[in-house]
Length: 184
Image (cartoon, rainbow, N blue to C red; front, side, top):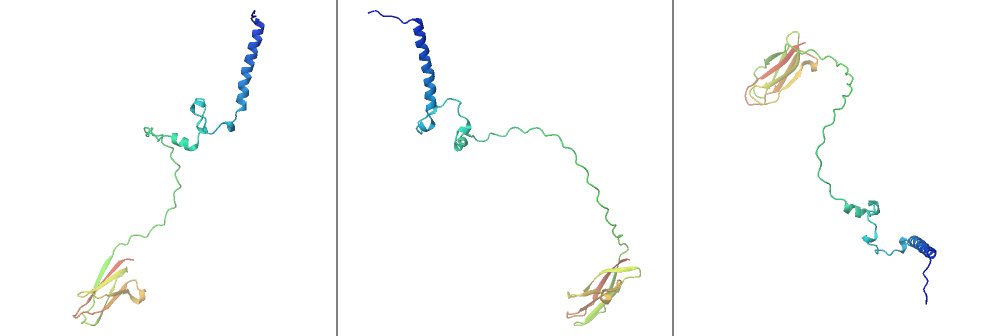
């Protein structure tokens, strides 16, 4: 039996046919497999092309595990430039002028007559001419009973004040009164 070797043309045709089948066969196979056809859990790391997955392809809890702790703070940066000075506000209105200071105060001191235990005592004091009463105080010399102090004529006098009290102690006593007067 004699054997015939194929001619160059026949070999070229056979080679072209083999190349065509191999090229279209892979494309057809790739387009026919879908995710529904892949069994869950059957793919492994070696089945995935290196560098083909992005962080968005991973589940959120997986991304959280992959995020490491915050690193140490970096060095403090240089202080920035000072900003521009703001506009000056409007000047407020001038307030009213207050009263002139009171000068020439004087304290007038008087006393009641000595009263026996259980009796009432009173004293009065008046400012000299040109002065006005601004306050007064009074006390018993030897006991702690309260003494009432008030301006005369139900507060209408600007110069005379009165004091009065009941001597509830067991001894004779008297009231001392001080009236503060200022230049009117």
